[in-house]
Structure formats: C-alpha cells, structure tokens
Image (cartoon, rainbow, N blue to C red; front, side, top):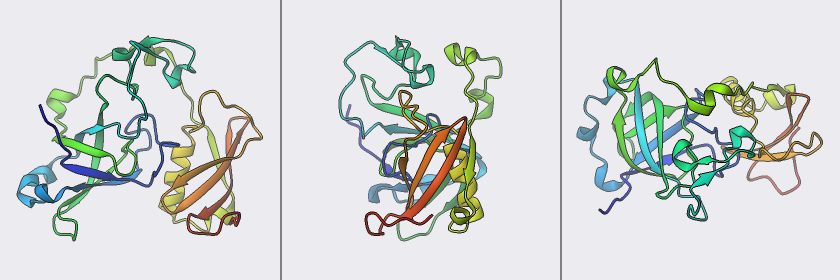
Length: 234
C-alpha cells in the first residue's frame, strides 16, 4: 500500500520541544490543516462544518530513528517504567503514525492555499504530514465507561505560570492565555529538574525563556525569533 500526505499541519511549534503530549491538553492551541494542491477542493469538505471535532491521522516525521524495541518508557511515568509499545502512545512505533482528535474552530473555503481547516488543541509540530482526516462521531467515538490503564493511576497536576507584566504587554490576551496553558503542562524533559536552568522554547514568532521552580513556571523573557542573537525583551 502506498500512502501519501493529503495535507500538512501549520503550528506555532517549529520544534518538538513544548508540544503537548496529547491533543486537547492545551485546548485553545491554534493550528491549520493546509491541503496539498491535488486535494484543494472545497467539495471534499462539504458537510464538515456541521461537526465540532475531527480526527487527524498523521506521521511522526521528526523522529530520527525507527522503533527497535517492544517496550518504551513513557515520559508521563518519569521514564522509569517500561511498558509495551502498543500499550502506550509513544511516537517510536513500528509505523510512525499518530492519531489526534481536535476541535474545529472554523473552515475557510477560499484562501490562496485553498480550503483551510482551522483547529484548536492539536499536538502536532509545524510541517507535520497528514494522511487523512475523519469527523469525530460522538455516538461511536465517545465511551464514558472506558478505562485508561496506567493513566488512571497517575495524576499530573498543572504548574502555576507567572508571566511578567513586561512579557504580557508583548502578547495579545489570547496569546498569553494559550502560552500559559502550554507551559502549565511542564514541557521540560522528564529527567531535567534543575530549578536554575533556563529553557528556551520556540513558539510562533517568539523565543520564550523560562525556568521552573517550586511548582511554578517563571517566564523570564521573550524575544522575536528574528532579533539578533543575545538581544532579549524582558
């Protein structure tokens, strides 16, 4: 079977660092589904405006190596426990295919890029290839009685996020709220807990600098990505 992308995802995240571990965790994180020229036909989206959510089937295109082990160590378990790859959503899989459910914000049928679907809450990096989209069907896809395996026995409290007033002035209210929602998920690698370390996270046109100490994320500065190296707005 030959499979080719029908679209690519446009996201504020230009690297893997900081991307939410699952879709829906940062519910207002914006993104766009931009179709390849062969699929830029508004008729293909006819009726989609009546749905609130959709599924995306996509490729873990930024993974540098193939899965070579039947077990993985999920970051949400601190990287200390091994589970079967098919009992997790690890990106390191025999076939690097991801599945995400996102909320439809709106659909633009007539743009210079053809029909574009604007979505919220995705966990994809900018440029991710998308193989298919399908509408989310509550009568078939929603299972309130479902159990979540190891995720039912763990809790991951969100961190408090503090944005300095000087940082807030550079962001719109929505940008500030979405950035805080993302940082509250603690984007640091699970093995890094140094409270003095400053992390850098590219997000849209911004380079965000932050540290984490005592359960709080402190944004220490932001700069635009086209500023000269070393110059920082704070």
